[in-house]
Length: 125
Image 1 (cartoon, rainbow, N blue to C red):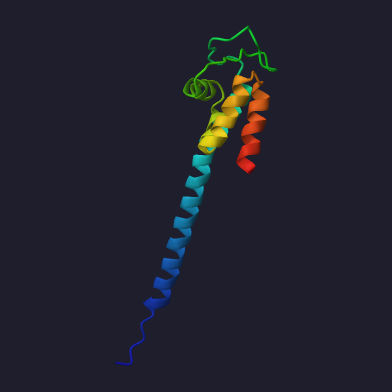
Image 2: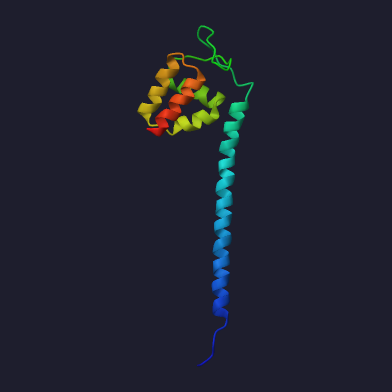
């Protein structure tokens, strides 16, 4: 009856250690998943050879890439995804009305830097 259970503190320490290990593992996994996104942004920024799509009136962006101008928003989205995947990821987070605002800017012949600025501006609203 009067026996003392010495394993109880050990079990508490073991449980605390297990929780700490699980938290560290999940934090490491979260950082690893961000790595793919960051790598996509870096690849976009350093890309010298994107997929080229048809252009209108030979217009070029400030970085020398031709800017396609289509009448259809899904084609613009495909172009953005194929050539500027990081910007496309941010664009996907926008509401439909904000996506239409980006599309209108695109149709006006804006350079990719202006399109990126618009996406960033709209994300902050």
